[in-house]
Length: 462
Ligand code: FUB
Image (tube, rainbow, N blue to C red; front, side):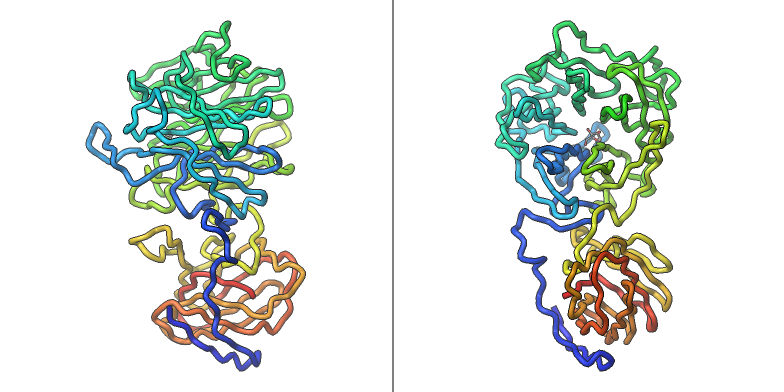
């Protein structure tokens, strides 16, 4: 990479930036703090759980497709599961692969159908529920058991008898029972051993109301304006049970929800939590947790695969309830949740607000390289909220930039630093001494003051 020494006469100090290694983190650790939350692999259907004071995410793992659908198009392709954890929702550890299709005794070893999973703790054991294509046909739901959320997991020899379907979700209810939901509107009480359905419980006991069959699919609740439901996620809060799920409102999935006073319903449809993805990604699949007093909504979109919506990436937003227990609609953001340290590469293309600037992929041959912010003309700007400068004011700031002509950027986080950018056709790290002391939590605004067609990859304070 080309480096330039930029003399910032105004501040009297300038230096070449050193290569940056994201603070020497181990390979399995990512610092994102923005959406998507994982940048090393695709991660769909993110089921988040809080175990031992940490957030664990059990997603599906999309890989480049070797599977074709009945119409010959490329299809969902998943051969294993990884588990991720974080204490701050900013720094994520990939604990590696926990279950692989070739190790599932009852599953087809080459079906690539390891769809949306869940994990629940009971009496110190972690029960990982996963759907997979069964050797005997159709989908079944298997269980793998571990002593720790990150594994190692032991895969049980048989799937759960009585469940033919996808997308298991287990609700640990305050009545002391666990209920398993799956597929399009099924629910059953789990036996105490967590690996069988309770004997006195038939498989389809969900009091959905009268089912309606239409030529477009199955309606799961009478009066529910849905045509198909999958990916159920049930939880309990404040005396209410919530059944949240994707369904097709028009052409692609939204996330809607219903509420009940009993874990097994009847659930009454309440509305939308998240509308269709604007980019046309057909699926959405989510989970909801309360972590340290804040509710979070995990979901997915095909950010790192804009041309193929079966390769998806996990994202997070904050979720809020109304006083009557209903849920406020959530809108996808790039910024996601959690403060980001100013000493890390701050990818301002994951903005909180944007005015005039445009966001583009850095490398369309490798979308995992992420995005850049393009400032076409003076005045274009973006703001990145919750940037933590800590107690020690940084001495310099580095901007990774390309510029068609010499330009000036203004970086404002309470106080302003002006960065003179030379014309540079290749990515260049321009470092400028800080003329002001910036500390604490700030919102950073980056504005093009003069020049045109300036691209910024990231900003980092040293
Ligand atoms: O990831 C495969 C399937 O796509 C999931 O099981 C569905 O919920 C949808 O997200």
